[in-house]
Amino acid sequence: MLPKLILSLLLSPLQYCLLTVASDPDPVQDYCIPNPRFNPNIIRTHKLLSSILPCKNASEVTAHDFVFSGMKNFVPNFSDTGLSTISVSPTLFPGLNTLGMSFSRAELDVGGINPPHFHPRATEIAFLVKGSIYSGFVDSSNRVFAKVIQAGEVTVYPRGLVHFQMNVGDKPAMIFGSFNSQNPGIQKIPAAVFGSGIEEELLEKAFGMSSRQIGLMRKRFEPKKAK
Image 1: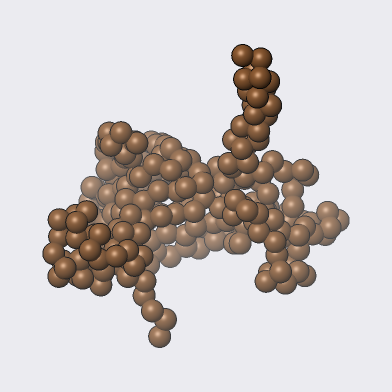
Image 2: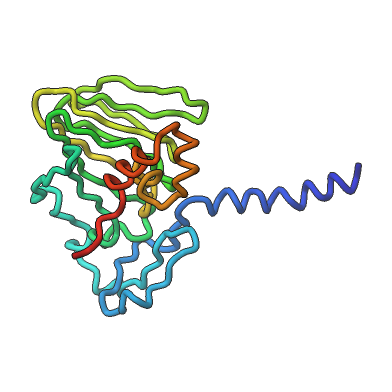
């Protein structure tokens, strides 16, 4: 009994450490504006994909480093699904660096959708600025939580859970999303399944689809090749 107790006490701090490194690291200073003098090709990357960028000297930091104007100048360019987004991370907005957050603006055309997807490293809070959308997520027991939300309402998508949005109004909708990671990541379900190169036989058996049907889906979702 005693050896088990000792082993448990020894492993408890390790378990805590593993949990604490599962998200962005805590900042060790007030802010860290990336120093543009450094070559981005030699910037180190955290093993959990949270960027660690060399900082400017504090004396060189100005108020402009903490303001991002790209949102107000954003012009929607809708995809085939009626979605247009701008994702803002430290790459676009240096003031976010090391603060453990990022955000996005999404616009949905009438009837447009944001296909099922998830963020492996962040919970998302979404504020509907205008419009009316059908929005929700699916938990790990395949229970769906979804409803139509209106302008002024806020919804949350837990980290790692599949979620989706569809404009059900008669005007374009606008959504602001905020993430508790500066690098939340995104995995789009259709593209991950049919555009990633998974063996065709497996897909046929998993979805009960013919080789021709799989081919059509792959053609639709395979990565676009640069011309």
